[in-house]
Length: 56
Image (tube, rainbow, N blue to C red):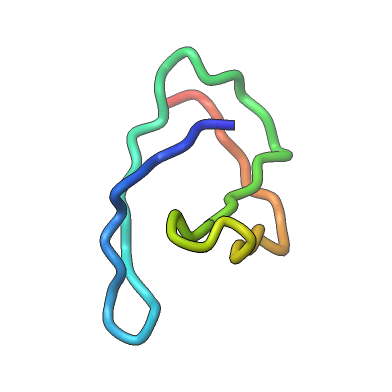
């Protein structure tokens, strides 16, 4: 799991973050995103579906 910290919170609990996927990341179709609070680690959610990372 790759952890990104310091992501700003948007208005109303929504926001946008552009992420550059490292070239060394294996291709696959079973990736998930998990969002967690750094203040309250027990407060988190994981995406309901998977997404694909493929070559450029």
